Image 1 (cartoon, rainbow, N blue to C red):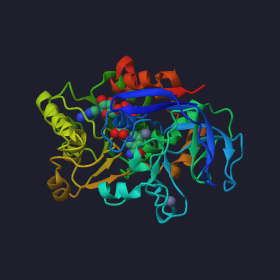
Image 2: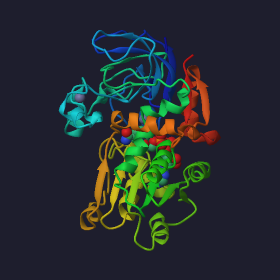
Image 3: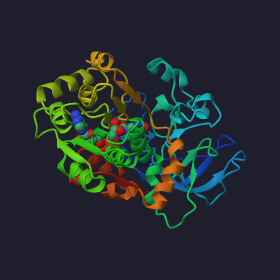
Image 4: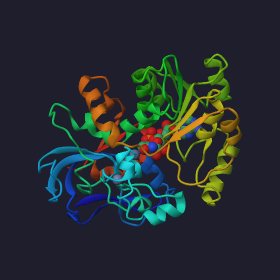
Amino acid sequence: MKANCWIRPNHLEVQEVPEPKILNSRDAIVRITTTAICGSDLHLLDGYVPAMRKGDILGHEFMGEVVELGPGVKNLKVGDRVVVPFPIACGACNACVNEMYSLCENSNPHAGFAEKLLGYPTSGVFGYSHLTGGFAGGQAEYARVPFADVGPLKIENDDLSDEKVLFLSDILPTGYMGAEMCDIKPGDVIAIWGAGPVGQFAAASAFLLGAERVIVIDRFPYRLKMAAENTGAETINYEEITNVREALKQMTGGRGPDACIDAVGLEAHHHSLPIYTYDKAKQFARNESDRPYALRQAILACRNGGTVSVVGVYGGFIDKFPMGAVMNRSLTIKSGQCHVHRYMKPLLERIEKGELDPTFIITHRMSLDETPKGYDIFKHKQDECMKVVLSPN
Ligand SMILES: NC(=O)c1ccc[n+]([C@@H]2O[C@H](COP(=O)([O-])OP(=O)(O)OC[C@H]3O[C@@H](n4cnc5c(N)ncnc54)[C@H](O)[C@@H]3O)[C@@H](O)[C@H]2O)c1
Ligand SMILES: [Zn+2]
Ligand SMILES: [Zn+2]
């Protein structure tokens, strides 16, 4: 079969690879009908997530048709149409029972490796390095789905296109969880760094959860425009002003946003070239793993006693973390790889009711063969790219 493989940093190839096989009784094989490229994939492409190996198959946002099942999967049948959540979760461990699926204690075969870097291991994830288990991903014609009796969400309504439900695999729940972690109360103002797909869905979700105002911060006018037109958010282009915190202060009566969402992560950009170069050099020399500009700003801009919700991905260690602001101003930081399973059904219901239509972010549709080109366009934000959706067939 064909699959998009990581070869080395900034080099991907669509290669012919062996088809996956059932290895365990709770496995399913899914023939992929639609898949996508995520902002998290860019961190792999750029070589910032350790433990990638030549030939690893990328992709963790995918859906398709069940073509084979292990004997332990009783709730699915061959021919079912499913969306697959990106974390792999057993459904029975302490983390899963507490609905913390991206922390499943049974799904990461390389747990010892993750433990060394992070203190304790996290769950397995499709196509996301050997730190999260080395599982083959979904930018391919087929994928093996472990614990298929727990993760895949069956789509029974044939009126829902793949594009309407695909993002239940990751970014829609992630944006929603980013907003949910803000514990939004009526009248709240939520600021969101990053107007990528995750930021767009965080903005839409913040309004659904009762925010009065949402302010999205980025530097790409087409992304800010999409947020304004599709979610109703106000916007700040940080390249057009001198100080984001000052701008937010002015927009919030001098108090600051009630909660701030970081939907940028470890490859943040800074509009001051010397500062940007300093952190890029440190990152290149592996003196820090992540560039935390958006996170620092989110912490410093948040009102006293507010919440900073971090859904942007971080890999390791950061410089100049403003702990003084967190401690002295009673801030709460919440974070996590999304516990996708928790949100799939409720968000599917919202899509079916017409409360959410996630298709507005799709700007590019390509074949699997064109995946490396899709990464390139998405990474460099060319051609007003927001989200690339791929069809293997
Ligand atoms: N927690 C999770 O489970 C989860 C799931 C999916 C994605 N993510 C992460 O969410 C983040 C966003 O993903 P995406 O798909 O939207 O990616 P994306 O690359 O399309 O969007 C990131 C946006 O951040 C903007 N940005 C960069 N520096 C900034 C700064 N200093 N201030 C404000 N905006 C800035 C960029 O211009 C870009 O528009 C990534 O880190 C990704 O890994 C996390
Ligand atoms: Zn993702
Ligand atoms: Zn588990």
